[in-house]
Length: 590
Image 1 (cartoon, one colour):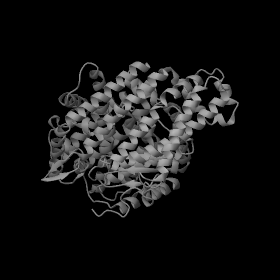
Image 2: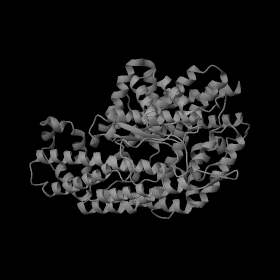
Image 3: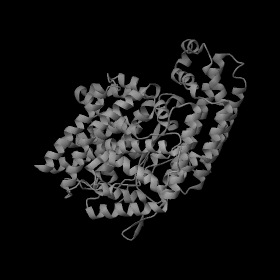
């Protein structure tokens, strides 16, 4: 495929290289701000409450702005070249520097959480009111704070612990050689071939992918074991009942909401198995769908798109929804926000990274020109649009939780594919589009359920055993079987999904699986509102996204009249997918 003239992202909005004097100056400024936090901690109990609050907010904002800019640059460089030692060195230096914050920040937070007049201070000061959520969260989080020394130890330990293991996993999966038909290709390129129209290509690519994992399975297993044990130990020390409870707390989400979601997903799992078996029959298989054909295209949507064509496709659809979304996407393409193509050393998959200092985002994809790649672009640009809605807050109040993080992205997916289905002119084109949407939905329901089950089982087992690669594969097989059932031919299940998915390899973000189902089904509920309300829905949608960083997920959804703890809400979204499955089966059998 001919690459566009802007196929790589532009990071000059941050720095012009690791030798940029501006980068050196910002490192020095960050070091100074870190020392200032230590100085403030030393007098936290002796100065007036109002002064402490104002001074802490001021220095936290400076640390946040500098850290996001420096870390952001290093992470983005590393993501496209995991062999870049300068990026790795800077991230290590920054982690070491910021570890010095842990103890003094704990002292300051303890002082703030102990203020009996905190609410009076907030309500009586217009400037503090803007930071009400930030300050109240400090008081709320204090129950899980350790001592100053313990917080410092955890911060230091993580540098050579979970964070280092996560980087190892990124390096392993981005540099491993996949032998495909006599050629060396990247893992991302091999996995992209799962969307190819030729069944022989899909089968050969899948077998080549599986054959590459034994090269790195021992190292990856050590990484995953170490990360999960660190999480378990931290949860015990902080007082969380389990890593899942910690994930829910950090997600600002109740267990009742998760239980309603998981229960609804489990109820509809047989319907998704019907879809998989029907797709298998359409491809000539009689006993379920082989894993290698899960993403096989059906219908006539097998054309390849250039980057320019992808741009125009998205702009045409988003222009009918909202001018702000259209204009942001246009900027993303034209101002080099996106790194498009797979290459050696580049991490797999796709992600969005907000750049608050420039009020922009950067998007990584491994674009191969399939329609699914356009949907992936829409997804990541949905994250970028979400970023735009929270950039008006201070950097210390811009973080939204995992579940709502997948709402705008999935809404974009539904918007793009639903519009495309409505515009379809032939049965074959409509079949292709519906199948594409169901394929994505199957991932956020069936595959996400299997990932949730797998991660649960790993945490349950890790206390008592070191999980070998064989044991990891066994747990993954069991989880996939419980989710996919007879929809996928059991002998073809993917035993190494624990290795190729980076979501498991974080010491700070456990259970990054259910948020995809949450976001997908919430997005469908919001899309249904949009279909009913039309243009009047758009301001509400932006207000919801804006509220996500300073609210619980339940309170945010309530703005649209949605009760997330009610299983019936989740069933509505799943039922709309069940209707599409019936439509799909009717198209392929008649």
